[in-house]
Image (tube, rainbow, N blue to C red; front, side, top):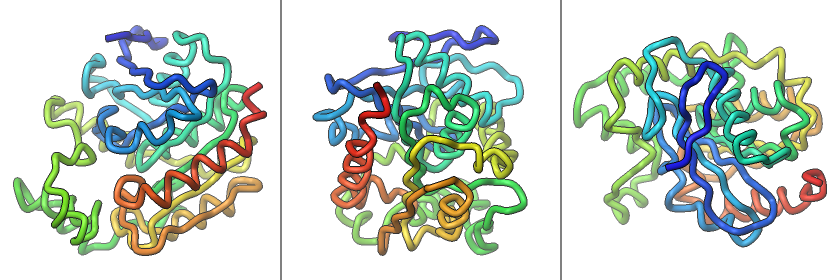
Length: 264
């Protein structure tokens, strides 16, 4: 397992797949490992070499019991790119990974060729919060909480035909303290002031039926980032990239192909 070392010495496990000439960083959701992308990763390989990582606190990365932040996760992404010798890359982040991707693009503009933000939000007081019923459902314990999360991720038809495993539900092996650290990092995220400074061409994707992260956040991001495009996927819930891969994958690939020249 290859590792990069962050500025504070934390080892960040990363994974490289494919042979495409243009690197594409794929960033997973909160408390999840690179396996978040397992079902769709190969879709990108005809055109891209994909790079994933296990966030600190998850998977094979170190798990320091210190505060985490989306800014810090973004710096870990840059540490991985430095270790690979990759000057610029496309960045595609979903859910909390989209929050991390916002900071990658804002803090490291020369490293970000094109940006895709999926099922995410700007955070802070400007964000549209999930409803009370959703928060109540997720506050349950054990199998009920897991079922509630599954139903927020996927439509009933998808769940009936795909019993799992579902890597979008989180890393079951991570310590409880690390899970709390991830939750706090995501809750504290606020990139509102940084968004107008993002220079990378940006595509914002979101499912219309996403209640875990309300779709109204997609419009906020698209309006706040200069020149950003918005694409809503009808009927999709939070894991749109997996269940609606036949729609989402080509949207991302076409967008990145259009901006391929910006990596040179």
